[in-house]
Image 1 (cartoon, helix red, strand yellow):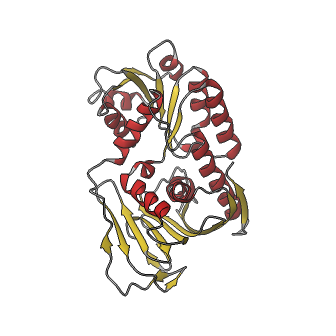
Image 2: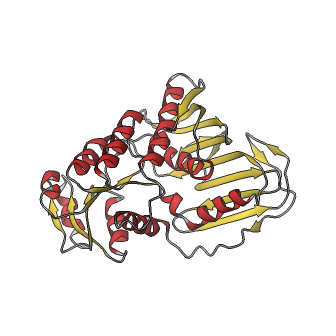
Image 3: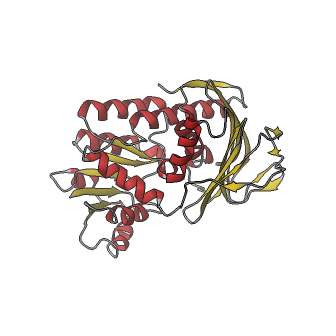
Length: 339
């Protein structure tokens, strides 16, 4: 039985705990949060879990074999580092860290200790993503040189992280998963902020040897191109034989193929003279977050390496850090290198 401790019981922590306990051979044996009222609330779903406000107490002894760190991104580095130093495997909410230097340090620490370090880039555990990647490898879309990533209308976080570090990891991880980004440059411009000043909408572009991409990220209530954003997690891959459009959420997912090379205005939209057809070979019966939890347990057991390991997650952080620098410079192209 893999015993997992969950650090952070806000919005996502209890949801993650429920998914972990649904995986055969996994139990949530401990929970930790400085807010005692949240500890009391989680007892309703985990009555047998050890509950504490002291992270060191959760790490001590043999209460847990692994830790799920579900805190704000800027609070990832220290608890992940402490868990690895305590000999615990780590499952951490995306992104791995908020700087490339921190991400590399954690990756190297896990490798030296021979521990699993996995970041929860949930979309990478959607079986539709695996089917799409196979289609790219098999050339079903032809040569794909352009992509469009849209992660729109997620709930706002007035206390942070901003939209780049909240929704941005999804878009960048998708590009990393499909194309294996190595080096290139990224340019990002802010579009909107919350009244308190937190970045809430941004548009960007990425260029690498593998792909060129446009990225749009915005929270609910924001506007892009003078229009309010609608809820969407959308990936569009433009091949010279076909265009693929994936739209996903926890409640509904679909992938469709437009079987022709389409005239396309890369920035603003596409002409679709023929109707899209459902992508063959997909049932959508799986649950990506359960898949992610299962993948972590399998990696700890030595059954299979996890997709979003330390190297993968460090590459995502490298791109996000370059995007942050571009934002700070008013949108100037900024180089990145993922390894």
